[in-house]
Amino acid sequence: MEPILKLFTELLPGLSPLLPYWLLATLSALIAALVLFGFIAVFALFAIWLERKISAHMQDRLGPMEVGGWHGWAQTIADTFKLLMKEDLIPEKADRFLFKLAPMIVFSVSIASFAVLPWSRDFIPTDLNVGLLYILSISSLAVIGILMGGWASNNKWSLYGAMRSVAQIVSYEIPISLSLITVILITGTLSMQGIVQSQQGNFLSWNIFHYFPFMFVAFVIYFIASLAEVNRTPFDLPEAESELVAGFHTEYSGMRFAFFFLAEYANMFIVSAIAATAFLGGWLPPFSFLDFIPGPFWFFGKSLFLVFVQMWLRWTLPRLRVDQLMYTSWKVLTPFSFVLILIVSFWQLLTL
Amino acid sequence: MREYFKNIYEAIVTILIGMGVTFRHLFVPSVTLQYPHEKLKLPERSRMKLFVNIDDCIGCRQCERACPVDCITIDTIKAGKDEDLGAASNGQKKRFHVTKFDIDMSLCCFCNLCTFPCPTECIYMTPEFDFATYDRNNLIFHFSNYTPEQVRELKEREAQQKAALANAKTGKKPEQK
Image 1 (tube, rainbow over the protein chains, first blue to last red):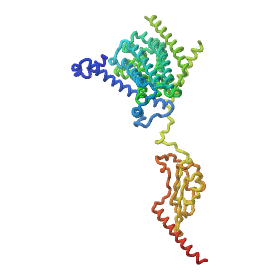
Image 2: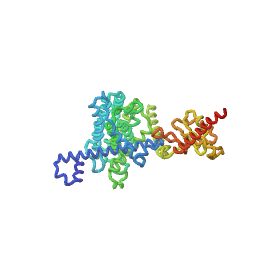
Image 3: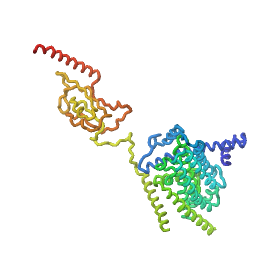
Image 4: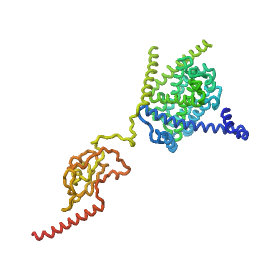
């Protein structure tokens, strides 16, 4: 909270003595939330357009080309308006309260994760000393929203999707946490800002090149598991179009569906941003002489690159079977990350 | 155990190969044709929209008879005795005013049967294929050059001639008997 407050008092110096502290804090939090929502919405619009373009070009197509002129840049804006105009349907036998609550939970969870993303040396919404732990715990809350939506829809496809999603996210949280533990072993801190600062130097001092190649493997494990965490192909079993219609959000339409969709793209950005922070040096430039370019550029660029890789994988790989999904998590990623923790700890002991 | 590591190795290698393929295709020029802006050129003799070169039509109505779905409707009025309508481009003399030559493309089955009997080869199929409209009536193409006034005039003249002929006949008959 403090950095935001500081930013606001710096931007509007005349305002801070006039207002009581509680009002100032509430106002600045509200404005920050609005800005964040704007960022998520714009990012989702851009990412959806990018995804459609990338998928199209990877299949030798063109993708949206008409709306807005240049390569259909306004296509997703038009789609959003269409989505907002749609009727808000709730199935007759749905659990109305849970049905309405589910998209709110999913979206607020993904918005809450933005609280600890370090954008630059000075700007981080909240520099919690347990930032990484906070993100890990808050991102597993999304499961509840998904299960809620699937259950409340009173539809077998939704329920199947939700159950798959829960099984998937719960099992993939383990390799995620374990691979991030290796990072914590190296940096010795859970604070996101501290993790970034411990990677000071040129790109060779980033965590991904630390103890080469072990941290690189940890990064790959984290990346694969994060794909499953955000339900993207090849781990998109919860919303497998060809099997489950649309999975847990089959019954959602209009605004509520838009919230699920926004949350999905926001989550893509969040897991990429965590990967960028933990492994790729966050807002640090790859070479120290590039310091004059502000941190948000590097942070956003690295995250966007990882988002691109996610899309790239999505349009390369087919969907896994459920047993293959469980095999990958429990028999490959988890043991490997345990071995990595052992290796990294021993290495640290030896070089102490 | 060996199998286990082999599987992991294979998975990683094949995924990388697949990613290589998709990355290469990211820069391959697309095969998409932006349809309304650019069109595929159809072969010269493809059977799409019918066209009638009405200047060459002699009004013989053979196409109308050949059509299996009756999508061609022709009205003709005989030319007067001293009237010269000229000739078609292959020398055939025109003896009829073609006052109506309508083709209903919504009925047409693109069988091309109408083009063969035409003695002057004035009806043929063109490669033009997008003539979709919002109104079904717009799919009826009118080829005749005659204005409604001209048609009315010609019809009146014909009726007069017929009446005159009939009068002459009825007038002559008792004399012959």
